[in-house]
Image (cartoon, rainbow, N blue to C red; front, side, top):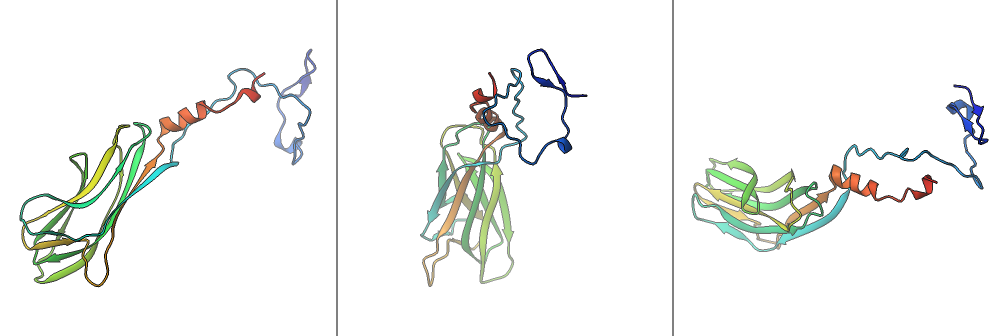
Amino acid sequence: MAITKNNTRMLEGTIGASQLDDTLDLSSKTVTLPAASVTAHAQGGGKVLQVVMGTLTTLFQQTANNTTQDTGLSATITPSSTDSKIYVTTSAAIVLDNIGNANFYLDRAGSTVVGQNLFSTTSGYNTSTHNFVYLDSPSTTSAVTYKVQCDKDGGSIFYNYQNDVTSTAVMVLMEIEGKQELRDRLNKMDTSYLIP
């Protein structure tokens, strides 16, 4: 479309990129956009809104068989929106002693979010590091507590094993912005300077 001048002394039409200088100087000029011409498209969230960390510095030893117990590692976070995701990571030194199945659970408010099954037929002590990495959707704005639980069918589990040093088991919770939160944030942006 050719560039034309209308009755209000404004230019109308399309200007190609090759017709523009590297810098467009609009100082002391007024740029008028039609009402509702600015639309925010939320393709996805992803911004980290808050980070919470929980730690455990004592040893948890599980000797009871076929009984799910708390290890003592937990953290609580209050999401700002029901659309938020919670990125959960945990890490702990563990020792399995004469064990068959050792099961670990990431619990949220009394419900298992995800589980992991370790198995060993080797007698004696087996050392490892246990980790959870999970992106959860709690769909709430109430405080949510995550914790690590475990059970077994024989032997003993030593969670956050202590010997030469004081081990520290860690849980990190990160609230990740959801799409609706991004839309809300964009809708609250001050665009008054764009509209006459």
